Image (cartoon, rainbow, N blue to C red; front, side, top):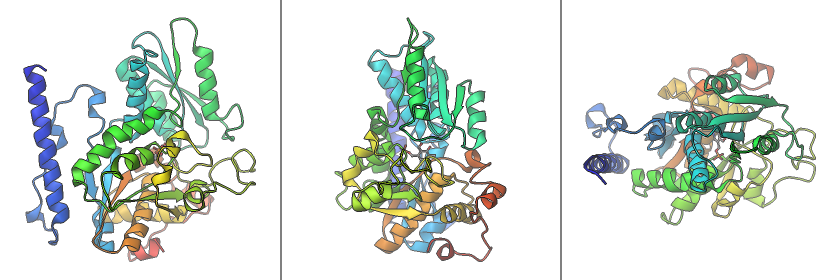
Length: 400
Ligand SMILES: Cc1ncc(COP(=O)(O)O)c(C=O)c1O
C-alpha cells in the first residue's frame, strides 16, 4: 500500500463507521423524527473512486417514511437504483467479468465479447462495465420488455438481439440463444464469453461479498426481516447466506409476482402443477407486468439460498402498481416494478411481525426504466391493471 492507498482506506473506513453509527443511532431512536434531530449525514460522494466500476455498490439504506409510519416498523430500502448502471445488477456484472478474468477466460482489449440473455437490467450493467473494462457486449432479450431498455443498451454500444418470449426448452429462448451465440463467436483469439447470470456462482457471490456485508454494517445486525423478490435468485441467496448465520432472529421472506412458481416452491416445496411447468404450459412467460422477478424454473443461484427462506408472499400487479403511485405521492420515491412488489410484501411482513421491527428490502431500479409499461397508464388500461390512486386512499386500501 502506498500513502495514497492508506489515506483512501482511512477516509473510507471513517466514512463507513460514521454512516453506520449514525444509522444505528437513528434506528434505535424512539423519538419522533424532526429536521433538527437529523443525524449527521456523510455523503458517499466525498469518496474518490476509480472509474465507473468504482461507483458500484456502497448504496445507502433509506428509511421509507410513509411505510414506516403507517406500520410502526422501520422499513429500510437498499437504494440499488443509485448504481451507475441503474440497478443492483452492476455488482453482478462486475463480479462475473472479474471472475472470468481471474480464471484467464477474458482478457481486456483483445476484441472479446460478453454474451448474456437478460430481461434488461443485467444487459445494461454488462454493457456499461464491458465498455469500462475493454470488451464488447451482445445482449439477447425477449421482445416484450419496456422499450427504453433496448434504447439504453443501443446507446451503450451493445449489440441487441430481440427474440420472441418462449420457454426454456426452446433452443431460441433468450438465455439459450445467448449461450449459442457465444459458442458461435468463439473463434481464434477473440473469446465469446457467456456470462450466464442464472447459473453463474459469481452472481450469488457478488451479493454475498458486497450487498450482504454492507447491509450488516449499515444496521449493525439490527434486522428482523429481509423481504425481496427473485429472478435469478442471486440477490436473495447471497444476502440470505451472508446475513442469516450472523443475525439470529432474522427471517427471510420471498416477494413473488403472480404467475411465478417460486411462491409455491417456498410454501409447499412444489414449483407448479404439471400443466404449469415451463415448457408445458401454453403461456410461456410469467403472467405479470412486473419485470425482473418471478420465474418458473429452479435456477442454481436461487437454489443456493432456498433452504433458508422462511416464508413467501404473493403480490398482484394492481397492488404493485398502486404501491408505486403511493410512494411517489407520499415520499417522492420513483421506483420500478420489482421494487414496488418488494414494498408491498414488506408491508405484509410488517403487519405479520407487528410494530417495532426492522425490515430491510431492495429498491432494485428506478421507474425511469419502466416508463412505457409499468408507468404507462395506457399500457396498464389495455391490460386491465389498476393504476388509479385517490388522494385520500391509504396504505390499507392498497395492501389488503
Ligand atoms: C429490476 C430487477 N429487480 C430484481 C431482479 C432480481 O434479482 P435477482 O436476479 O438477483 O434475483 C432483477 C433481475 O434481473 C431485476 O432486473
